[in-house]
Image 1 (cartoon, rainbow, N blue to C red):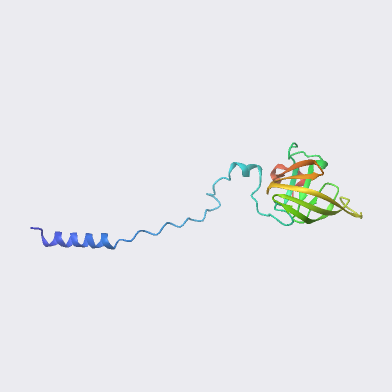
Image 2 (cartoon, rainbow, N blue to C red):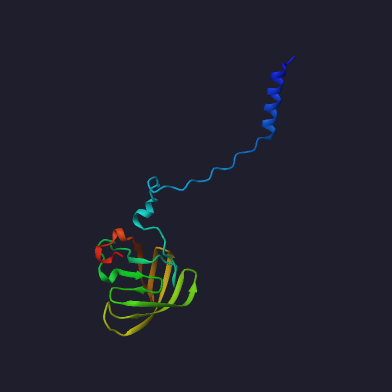
Length: 162
C-alpha cells in the first residue's frame, strides 16, 4: 500500500499539473542605449527613415545622382527633398503640385525660386518623378531621366549636412 504521505504528495502533484497554466509570453524588454543592436547593413549607408512623405513618398534630405559618390557631389548632381519640393543647388522654396499619379510615377508641376539666395523670380516646370522606393527616384524630362539616391548626413560633405 501507498503511505498516506506519498498519496497526498501524488494528489497535490496531479492537482498542480491539472491546474497548471501556461506562462504568459515574455514581453520584449526595451533595449537600452548601451545594448542596442547594430543597424542592418543598408542603414550603414542610409539613415533610418524618420521623415517620410509630403508631396512625394520620399525620405526628407539630400539625394545625389546614382553614379556620383555622396561624399563629393557636384551641384548639378544634388537634389534636396523637404516634403514640399525638390530643390537643386540654384533653386529654393520649391513646391510640388501632383497632377497625376500612375503607380510610382508622379507627373508634377513644380515651382521654385530660381536662385540659391537673394531675390529672384519664381518659375515652374512640368516633370515626371518615378519613385522606386523612399530612398530612390528618377527625375524625367521627356524621355530623358536621371536617377537619384538618398545620402545620409554621415556620407555628405560638411556644406550639405543638416
